[in-house]
Structures are given as C-alpha cells and as structure tokens.
Length: 625
Image (tube, rainbow, N blue to C red; front, side, top):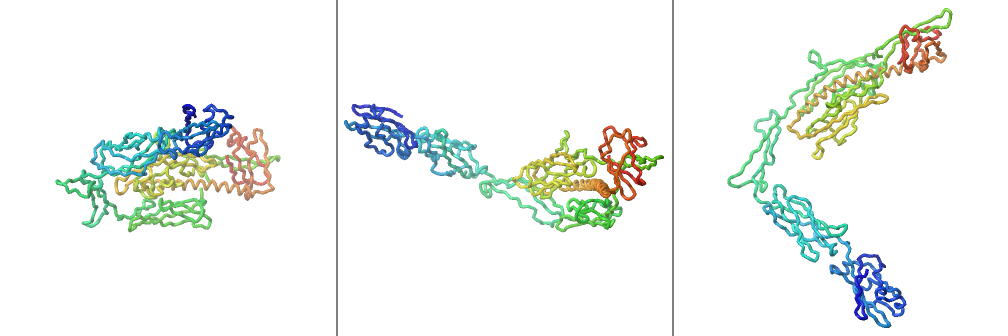
C-alpha cells in the first residue's frame, strides 16, 4: 500500500505501510513502477538496496523492482512502543546514479492481551472508611498501541466497590478502587474482587487480577450469644446437680466486653427430657383373653414358596412361608416370636403363633348343568353327568391406589420428615389394591423416578418407602418420587403415584412423628399380611388346578378317540374341547372359544353334549369358560 511519494529534484521518497506478522513473501509495493521506471531500465541501470537498519526484513526483485517481506516482522520487537513504526530503506540506480529513500510503516495488529504485573493484589481497608474513599491499583500493560491498547477496566459485581479510570496519556490508563458503601467486618471480613483490563480489538482481549480486600476491625459491637436459641437434652431420672448445658457468648471485636457500663444480652435455653427405656414392648396381636400373647392362623397346604418353612421380617413382624408344604410336614406349627426394643438395656416380650396347615378350598361353582351321552342303538342308551362351571378370573382391573391421592383424583401426596432421621426411617407407605383374584391381583411396587437414588428405597411387596442413609447439609430440601404399582397378569396393568418428600429442620430433640409413623406402618402391615395370605391362597389354588388338569391330559388313554353326534343347532364352537380319563372317570375340558350369542341353558336340548357310550360314564365334567 502506497502512502505517499515525494519528489525533490532527482530524488524521491516513497512511503509504504504493511501490517506486522504477515506471511513471508508478501508484496509491500513496486518501487520501480512508483518511480516510473520500466523493467529494461532496471536491468540496464542495476537497481538495488544499499542501506537500511532493518534491511534483512525486506528484499527487492532486481528484475521488476517489487519490494516484498523477507522474514517475520514483529512490530513490538522492531519498534517497541514507538509510534509510528517506520523502517528506512535506501535504493540506488546506477548509470546514471539515482538515490531514492523508501520508508515502510509497520502497522500494529491486536496480537497481545493486557497483562497485570501481579496475579493477586491485597488491600487492607478499615471498616470505618467512608463511602467515596479511593484506592489506587496497579495498571495493566498491553504491548499493542492505539486502538489495540487498553481501553477500559471492569470490576466484578459487588455492592461495596466500583472502579474509576484516569487517562494518563500515551495509552496509559490508571484504575482506582472507589468505596461505594461503608464496610462491616462483622458482616464480611474479606471481599474477593476481579479487575479486568480490556483492549479495543475485535474480538477484544483481556487480562485479570484478583483483588482481596481485608476489612480491618473497629470496636463497634457489643457481646452477643453464639446462638439465638440454645437446646439441650436431658435423660429422665438424672441425679441432682447434673450439668445440663453450657451457653457461650462472644464479641465480634474481641472475646469479652470491658466497656463501662457493661453491655448484656438475653438468650432462650430449651431443655428436652429424653425418654428412658423403662417400658417393655406390648404385643397387640396375637393376644388371648388371659393376657398371654397367642394366636392361631390357618394356611392352605398348597402354598408355593421356596427354601425352608417360615421366615420373619425383623422390621415389620410379617411371617411368611419360605417353601411349599409336603405331605410329610406337620399339620400344626408353633412359632415363638421375640419382640425387643433398642434400648441400652434392651427390654422384650414374646408371642406365640400357632400355624395350622389345612387342605385348600378349588373355588365356588358359578352354575351347573347336565351333560347327556347317548349311543346310536335302538333303543338308544344314554348316561348323564353334572357339569360344574367355574368362573376364572381375567386381569381386567387396574390397580387402585388408596394412598397417596388428591382431590382431583391424581395419585400424589406430600410427606414431611425431619432432617436428622437415620437410615431405615419409614417415610410413608403407598397403599393399593386390585379387584382381580390370584396372581392377577398380586401387586408389586417399584420406584420409577427419584431425585436422589442414594436417599430412598422402596419395598416391592409392601410399598413402604424408607431412607437409605442420613441426610446431609448438601441434600435438597424436597424430593419427588414416582411409584409404579403393577399386577402380575399376563398383560400387566399398572398405576402410578407421586410422593413429594419435604425435609424439614427438627423442631424437637426427638421426633414424635417416628412413633406415629411406626404405629401406622404396623397397622398397615397387618392388613397387607392378611391380604397377601388371601391372594396367595387363591393364586395357589388356581395354579394347582391348572397343573392337575394338564397332568390328567398327559396321562389319558391313547386308544380313546372322541366322537361327536352333531346337533342341528351345533355351530362348531366346541371344536377345541379336550377329553381325558382318570381311573373310572372321563373328563372334558372346554376352551373359551364359544361363539358370540351362544348360550347353555340347563334342560334344553341345544346345550346337551352327546358322547358315545363306549364305557360307563360317571363323575364330574369340568368346563372352563
């Protein structure tokens, strides 16, 4: 780029400009062209550079007079902060002799960031300093010049200080820290600020320094207690003279106030009397009229479980079977249950539960009708049998959540627990039921969503939500738990419930809510226990009936083939029936594929099943519809 060409007689002075850090070989200008010389004149007259302090930075093509950059040019190295930065060259033309002067100005680019002489600056300011007080700070330095030098200073947001800048010329700006609001050492003894120097480049470049303000104390405070409220716990029956609590007070300026007159303060001290373990547990169930804890429970023999016979949940008191009963098992079992508390000197009570193993009761007969089997002889011989129809449950009911539930019908509840509870604390219990029977009505609970998996656990059988660990100061004050309740049908149906757990600060030394929650959980556990026994019994009966029917089908005679005498009204809907024999009885299992609109009315000819009389028929025929 040509800035100017000046002629003085036979001499000319040419001025170019070029940015620093350009690539090697970048053209600065064509000296011969700017002097009005052609290539032949250059070759005949021997054009060359003969002088220049920075001559190695540039080179002239002897053939065409083009001036180009020979190496890397760093303006800050060549000229430091001198402005403008000029490189003087002298060119010579011989035959006849001509001397021309060339000046190349190196233009600055924004290739340096502002830098402070220190990374951290500490200031000591008395809390008695008035608003408006100014404190000089060290300026940052930027090797770039002009618009690329430091243009402004910025201070991190705070309520006590702001920054002012004074222009000292020559790209020098001096920052000052100005106090906006009187300091209070007792409120904040130290302030951390960040001062940022910004240049004028696009994009801008910046540098930072940390400013730490130490607030010097002034004796401006009276003694105060370390707490607004002191709390202490005391065991009942402690001896007279026992130390209850030590209250502490201090002065924000020094340890004690020796002023005249002496200043004083008041504080409230709450003393909570802690319970001692002087009461033995009382067993509510089982209990007999004479006060001894004993109860009798009956369970069906075909209960399906695993492992050994009985198990006891040590927290809920639920007794479960752990394997299926066999013919060799005793019909009556006596269980001695020990209940004890967690006192330093543990107190306990015992209860006896007698478990009687009884034969299972199949299900109620919804209806019955007669089936007649006749042959084709003359006269026709026949036999009949009574058909008992049992209604098998289908999984057509969605679980219903009893708790939690709100007024608009959505399952949601809010529980509050103190922050100082330990692991295993019962938060609440999700209660639900299913109108279906057997496995279709057996409910399982699962935790679908939770804000912190390390805090809460859910019992999949009882729906109890308990804490997995103690709360810390960093834990959130509110947690959302999404509970899924589903049944055990082939196509499982489900419902969801949301429990909001709010963690509150304890208002008393001992949480009475723990006692209330435990009592409530025990009552719920009893209901759940009986419900589980009932559902388990019905489910087991259903499973056993299916197994028996399949076994009988597998063992039927291979030489027996079913034949049907078609009726005029027969529509082929019983084509999936199965016949089998056990001993001297024959059985027929009819599948559920009966046509829409077909009915079976006892006594009518249309619902009579005709079977060939190959052998005598007796017993019962079970039809599954």
